[in-house]
Length: 372
Image (cartoon, rainbow, N blue to C red):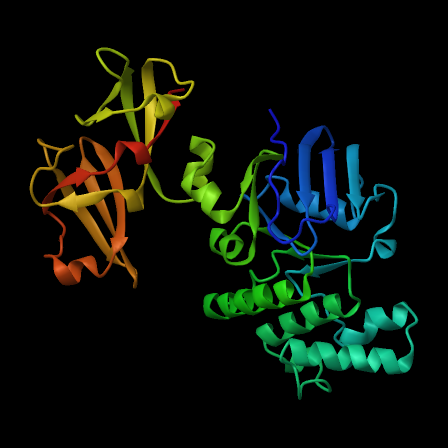
């Protein structure tokens, strides 16, 4: 069943800026977008997050006007946009490849859309100066794209998009070509700028960190549908399905058997027994189940724990990742991944390969699903 967007954006209590109602799109018989509903308030930033091929770019292209829905409606500020061409939508888009004109200077690139709108020369100059200041491009106005760094070119692309004062800004993997540090700097600056200007924004990304850094709400797309939508905290802390849980982080999936008597519990194949609440069971029937546990929710001990009293796991790999360390265990014929703050090893003895350890985690942090 398609997820209807009934959540309320935090940015405004005004009427929605953008409404997608039961939008569908197919290509040669393949369903790319399937019955999607989405509503954005003015100034809200929503990320479409998902793996390659999930339909997020197709959905963005329909909002931009590059594709036409087969079914459903797209409304911007109360006006149905399905048949309105892109150049009449007052929607600006920033692409991964920047799409700058190489023969034009920074100033002329930013001013391009303003000339197309036939603004007065003085107003164009004022808008360009405003964008140069907002995007920290002062002193670069006379340079050509080939004379700029990747980060500077991306700033120019954003400046050109915002200069026309669009009703909506669309970002299509806009920062994926930048190195990590520069990408995170741009995300922070753009997040502050968009909130200051109250620019309604839809962002497409496959990068969880980017979605969490920029968005007020995240719509997780899977197989052409919005599987879940909510604030970053909501979708991460309360994933609506095991597939959403696995997409948003590293998990270990334990096979087990759900028993309802004498009290609900799951006997994992590795020998652990988990008490579970009725809320955690949901609609899962007794019998074979899968239990997903996030890597960060598992703690390790050198002595038996309340959950793990026998047959310890063995450390096979420890990797230092800066602020975190990743520990891979062999446990009952399974590979278990544990992520924990690297500072832990400053207070405790490091666990090297070959060391035997015991696991512990809260059963309430697990996600049950039917096997098969």
